[in-house]
Length: 338
Ligand code: PBG
Image 1: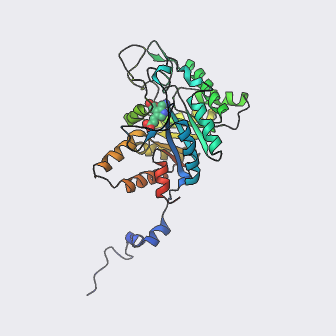
Image 2: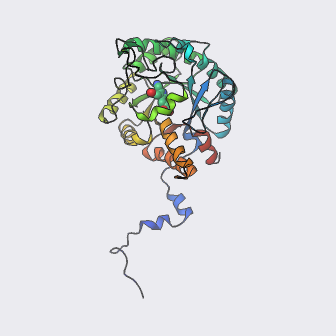
Image 3: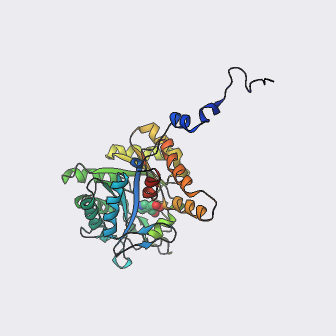
C-alpha cells in the first residue's frame, strides 16, 4: 500500500538533511572551534589556587599559575586570555589607586603570561571595580559616579596595562568617552598597536553575581551616599536595544577595534543587531552567572553538562559573534578536540 505524501508535491521534508551525521555535518551553518574562545581567568596575589564557591570548577590562579595557563592556552589553540584580578581588601581605596600600580598584580601577571606564551593575546579589563572599596567601576562623588574624573583614572590604568604588555584593552566601565580618551593616549604614548575591545553594550545585569565573589568586589550599596546601591547610572537598562547601537556607534567612532556585548546568552538579540549594523568583530561575554547556572543545573543532574556547554557556546556563533569570552574556554577547547 502506498501512502500519499505528507505535503502536497513536491514533498517538503526538511528532515532529509538531518538523517545522518555525515549530512548534518555537511550542511552545518556555523562551527565552534578553540579559535573562537577567549579564556576568562581570575588571578590573585597569593600562591596556589583558591576555588570560587559560586563557580564550581573555577579557581583564582596565582601569577605563576596564570603563566602556566597561558602555555596551556597556546597548546589548546585558545587565542587569548582575559585577566580579572582579585585584590586584597587592604589595598583598596575610594579611587581605586592600586589599579594604576605598574608593579601590581595585573602588571605582574601580564608580564609573566607574555613571557610564558608570547603567542597568546592578553586582554585586560579597564575599570576600577576590583580596586575600589565600594566596588563601583568609577570614582564616586556625592553619590554619583563622576564620569570625567573616572575616565582620567581609566586612561592611566589602561596605559599601565599596555606598558606591561597587554595586547587588548577592554574598557568595561561604561563611562562616556573612555574609548576616545584611551585611543588618544595610546597614540600619544607610542602604543598605537594596542587594540581596544570595548564593552560597548554592557547591561546592569543580575548575572554578574558570582564574578563579584570571584574578584572579592566591594559590596555595593551600604546605604552611604558614597556607595550607590547598583550600577544602573552607568550600565545599560536591560530593556533597551536601540541604545546599544548608539553605544556601539560611538565606541567605533572613538577608536574601538572590536565590540563586546555583555552578558551573553540573554542578549544574543543585541549581538545579532550589532553584527548586522556594523559588521565588525563582535564578541559576547558568557558571564559568571551564566557559568554558575549551567554548572548548578548539571550538578543536580538536570542538564548534560558537556552538551550544554558546547550548545551554549555554539549559540554565540550562530548569532554572529566572532567569539566568546568564557570561563569554559579550556574545557570547551578540550572537548572540541584541540
Ligand atoms: C566590571 C566587570 C564585571 C564583569 C567584568 N568586568 C562586573 C560588573 O560590571 O559589575 C563581569 C564578569 C562576569 O560576571 O563574569 N567592570
